Image (cartoon, rainbow, N blue to C red; front, side):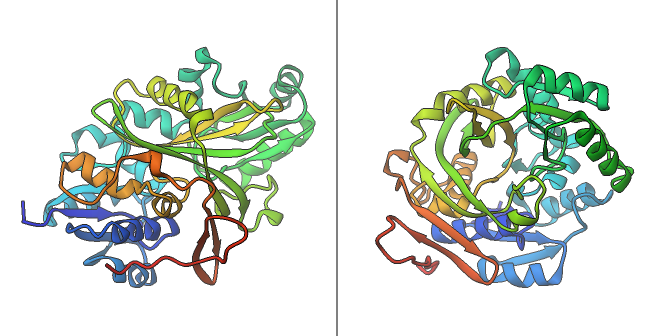
Length: 358
């Protein structure tokens, strides 16, 4: 291995990929950082933050996994930070055969992160997830509305960013939506739909890094606003424009229980999404095997998860600080399509951008 271990960041020109690169830049680490991208413009966006960017096929293209493994070997990659759902799905069948260290869980845990149905089955005995039923047609939906109450949250069992999500009040609404979705997305597999009890409260995230079954670091945040929410049927796009750091003590035990039930030996990153029910109880809605909230907000607040992943999984020396008690609670982040992310600690002070220079 070279003097400077090589860290690879996938989808490095995406919004999450760029934040992961910026987090590593903030940590002023000494590793060689390279990225993979599908476009030349994404490559250009990422190059200021890394040593090289390699063009690869999209994660949902058949040759992606083989091409990625070739990069692992040719670039002597010590650790790869995987940042999109299609890439995780491509890696999944061969996850446990890959020798390069990855940020995502091993195959058993990754199964629950990629399938909301599997996750629900593993968590349901603990009563920490929303009541859920598998539905396929109007009859199933009518039963779900009667059992779970009205309205219900309907969504695809597989896929990121609230894929196929909609709030329905009648079985006919849900049946029309499933039929429409199937006609518009022919060939998608598997075609499984879930109906959940409706959770009207705060939309929360608890991100954590684990190593060899032990919790290394964690922190929590709240989603406040989304890009283009006004044109999304569900009102949620999965792309957060305004968020803040919160005290994790209220949801920490629930989130830890969710991870340890979903995975018998946690390893890597787990981003647990939770939503509060009508009584303010936070219930788990999904677990992502990647940075899924805003890693740059966590890093600005004192918990730099990409740097912590590098330090914990590689055992390297660096500036990573695992003392999450120092997190800046209440720190807000706003993102715009035409400006760099900005932050503020309290509402009475100006917003500020971050500096990535040492």
